[in-house]
Each structure stands twice: as C-alpha cells, then as structure tokens.
Length: 264
Image 1 (cartoon, helix red, strand yellow):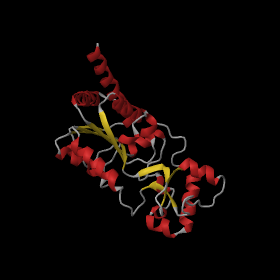
Image 2 (cartoon, helix red, strand yellow):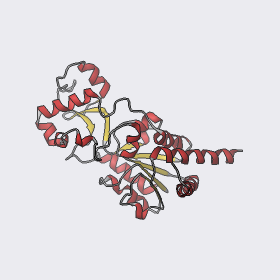
Image 3 (cartoon, helix red, strand yellow):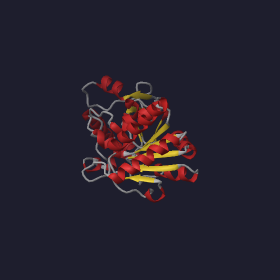
C-alpha cells in the first residue's frame, strides 16, 4: 500500500522526472525479486542453496567438478526459470520510450530490462548477463539457448565450438573485476545525468554502489526506491521505502498524465 507520505514523495519524484532532461536509472536485486528471481544475499536466498566457493573464478577455471556443477545448475534453470518483466521493468522501459530515461545501469543478470523493452544498447550490465556464455580462451560469446540446444540432454560440460576452450556464464564471478568498458560507460552516465533513479538496490556492493555518489558529486538529483534503508539515503533528495513495481508503476502513471495534459 502507498500511504499519504509516500504519495507526497511520489508527487515530488514525478515533478523531478518532468523537469529532468537526462535521467539515468540504477537497478538492483529488489527489481528482480518481484519477477520471482531469488535474491543472492538475503536469508533463504541463492547462497543458502549453493556453495559460493563454486562461483569463484579461480575454482571454476581449475576444477572440472565445479564446472559440472555449474552446467547442471544451468540445465535446471533455477535462477531465471520463466522470469518475466514486472511493473518496475515495464515502467522504466516506458519512461525510456517517453524520452525521459537515457540509460539503465543494472546489477542484475537476468536480461529483463531488455525483455521489457529497454534499448539493449542503453542497458549497462555491471555484473553480466546469464543469457550469454563466454569462452574463456578465445572470447567467443554464445546465446545460452544455443549451447543448451547443442548439448541436448547431456550433462557433459560443453566446450567452445571454435577453440574447444572453457565455457563460462558471462556473469561476474567472485574474484573477477567488473567489465571495464561497461563500468566506464555507466560511470560516465551517472556523472552526466541530472536525475539518478535508484530502484531496488541496497547499495552495498561496490564499485557499483558508487553510482549515486558520482551523480550527486556532479550536481544531479538522487531518488532511491527500495524496501529497506541504504547507505546512500542520507544524500538522496527523495527516499521511498516501498516495493519497486508498485512505486514505479505509480510514478509512470502520473508522468503519463502530465504528458497527456501537456498535449491536450
């Protein structure tokens, strides 16, 4: 439920969106969980079901058994099974179509922003994308569906069709640096927007969580929509502790009303 205080805050955010010329959106797990994708760090989340050690880059590269576990995990589809965009994804995509959102910077690996309709070229995935498989030797990238089809029902660990190298989900494992080019572009956009909307991120995973600081240092307004408090709440212009889907849906509805009124 959206109470009166949150209604007033949503009204302030709508005014900010209406006036902004260059909005960047930063999203985290709180957006994905509303599509049924398990959180990684919360109690009952992903790491309570799997050994985080199996997701270190060193163990993945040196242990055939770890790679077999990874492949069985991908075959099971537990992480992204039947995930569909929710109201938050749809609102963010619609704000882009309205010419308000210039980019989406995300910690999520589920491809749901693209499914919702955001331009893939404007989505900066700091932690990678589970829908792609990367060869660690030659750098070839394959759609996950292609590798699944090629491997059929076999639980044998697939290898690169080009060089027979090790294949790995194209996401950031523990011990890996964030993709340099993607991080650089995301940082640039955070530092050149006039409004940064943080949606569904606890802002505790760095360096991604520096994005609000870059935006504020550049003079941008900062809005945080998250169920729980974040370390950046104290520097935000508006903080709404509520669900991502409901809040972003309300923001979009009021922004649309404003557009309709201006065109009448």
